[in-house]
Image 1 (cartoon, rainbow, N blue to C red):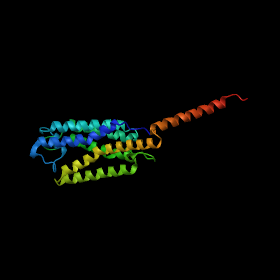
Image 2 (image 1 turned 90 degrees about the vertical axis):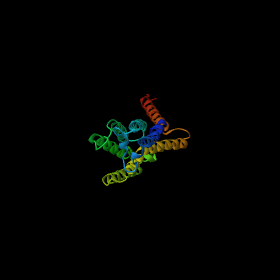
Image 3 (image 1 turned 30 degrees about the horizontal axis):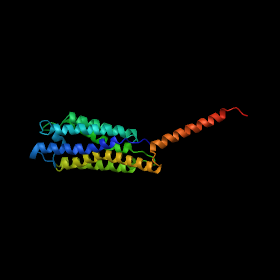
Image 4 (image 1 turned 60 degrees about the horizontal axis):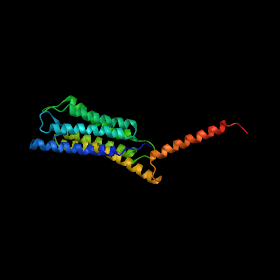
Length: 231
């Protein structure tokens, strides 16, 4: 299994911090007129908002973090890495097409839906369906966290319709989505460390490389013996 570079821990760890820090600072700049319980994060990045530049920057930073993390998650299934990277690009779209100061926006709403969908399904798509894989890439926890995100989305829609605690529901879902890549990266690094300890200091990738080399050497030796003239 291919190893995860340690810089992926930085990119995945920064994602939730930058997102939460962005909406906290933007809300402070907005003042008491903004209610984080009932109003969404997109309101902070809307045209004319006092802290729009902070929230827009947080969306861009979040997109970069997801793209870098998707690049570094080499043990994950390719479809999951593509979905995570797509979620990062969707964060760019959310930043580039902010919500209007009043009313709705079809383009902004579409960017939000696409981004949420990709970030909700990427754990399942990234799961490796075989034994001996890091915990974060196993099918059961991947399905569980995707289901949790889906339930959070249902709660968010219910709160939006009843004009209730939509801001709380949205923040909960986005926190889960931005934190899960960190969980997966950490589990991959821990798994690689455990395998290294069991193999006496050699990593999983090193063992795989040596296995390939020994296999090639064995095949080469057998070929030489077969081609040698009989005595």
